[in-house]
Length: 219
Image (cartoon, rainbow, N blue to C red; front, side, top):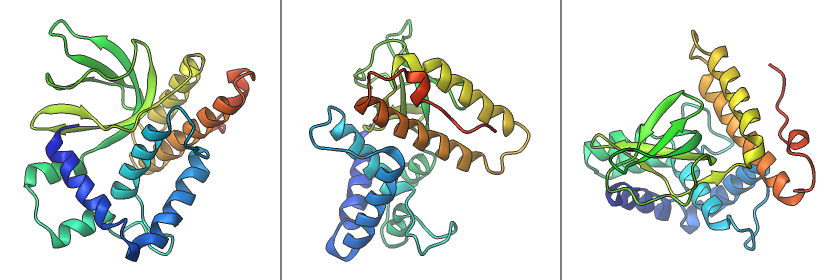
């Protein structure tokens, strides 16, 4: 991620992880990891999952006693602190989705396919190589800043055998909301949380056929 964006997000995280917000931080962790599966320090993707939680906590979390119109911690921070408009606009436009790493372009830039939104994403020229191989499918966040795309650090790579199942489910969500955007964000969030939860279960029960783990509700 671009250092200017990461710097602001880290300042927000530090502020809302202080002792005055400790109870809310615990509530957020309980909510998040109940829905995506428990995380343990010995897990190989522990750091990546915690990075994803931190970004969700700053950008999307609202306390249980708040309504959907209540500000996120990122929005609260901006009410008392200044930041460059282009940085604010970029972070507010963050996209959380299911992606596929499709390799590099002729210019050597890393290329993604946003599976949920059916879009091609070319990462910034200076973007470091992600820890992915061609064909890897993962859940993560991207942000467009100064006309270039950057990945957030928290990536959750999905099992290769689940790729066709995930693509099919993403297509169903896209089709269901093609003419009606209302509810799309909620449907996407439920799908992404459930996919992560399935990945966690798969990590613990890798001997079980992936088709028996990656099961989604019928629409």
